[in-house]
Length: 96
Figure (cartoon, rainbow, N blue to C red):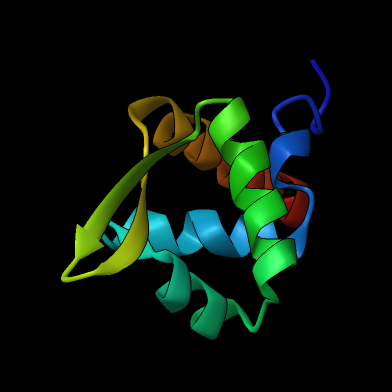
C-alpha cells in the first residue's frame, strides 16, 4: 500500500476541503455561512456541495426560516470517517 492510497479525490479541491473542515468542527453550517467562510460564489459552492452529497459525505437539509428557504449541511458518519483517513494520509505524506 502506498502513501497516497488514502488520499481521497473527493477532497482534492480547496472548496471541498474547506466544506469538510468546517463541518468537522460544527454540527452543521448553512449555505450562507459556508459561502462567507470560504469566499465562494453561489454556483461554485453549490457544485462542490452537490459533489460531496453525491458520495454521501454530507447530509443536506432544506427548511424554511420564516419565509426564506434555508439549506444546511452536516458531515455524515461516512464523510467524517473518510475525511479523517484523508487527513491522516496527508500527515503521513508530510511526515515522510
